[in-house]
Length: 319
Image (cartoon, rainbow, N blue to C red):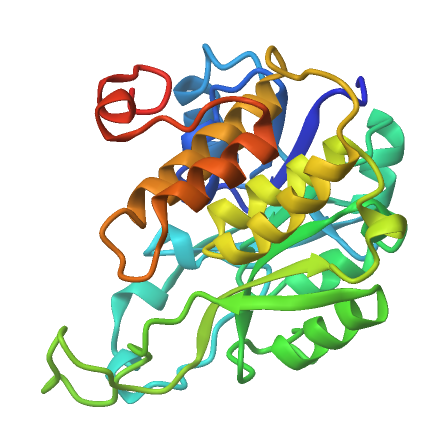
């Protein structure tokens, strides 16, 4: 697979590609590789994405070693896992969602062996495999050298019946050793509640699971972000993961490095679109100088910033 493509691995792809990537799933300069071990869901996804030429689906699981394993299918299919689940929450003890309705035997590959076999060096990784995330990362030591952004579901307590389950602290420690930094947690203050007498308009409960996002150390530009493409890739990832300030930091570095016109480059155009959208969201913010935005946008991309009407009427910026 050519290096011109941005490669995204989505491991645990039930229901489809992760929402954070949906805005660009039709960009043909991106290759999305989805992994779903449940055969029935795999078939459904194949049908769903039959016309997506830049998206491939694999009916395998990933882990820390090549083996066959059991996948326990729950009543609520999204809770299916290689592990069986504890009942840590009193409100869920009698829930039918957790009930295992069957188990199937699945093939498990390692991330490194898969990438080696396919001759790919992925840039981004998403994990949502119900407690098996740590095992996948342990099987991807070489791949971690190439990755620049990771999103993973994490738990803050042991919620499965296995000593091999990895929690947030183990995953975070492993990624720190590979020079990743924690970017953010997708937590809105609404955790696992222990009483039904709560409002959706307030914070409640215990933080048990959420998504966490990491990027390679942004202070080591020459090591991890030493090309125009890598700077554009990480900028886009940051716009998509609620870190526009860091995206703009990287685009400032990009503007000093760029040596060629990229107006036909689909990755470049995707970043232009997301940056303009972010700047548009600031137009009524106090203290934001529109003249400065125009100047910065021109510096970053070599094109004029689309002001309000042009932005709203543009099929490119506002399809």
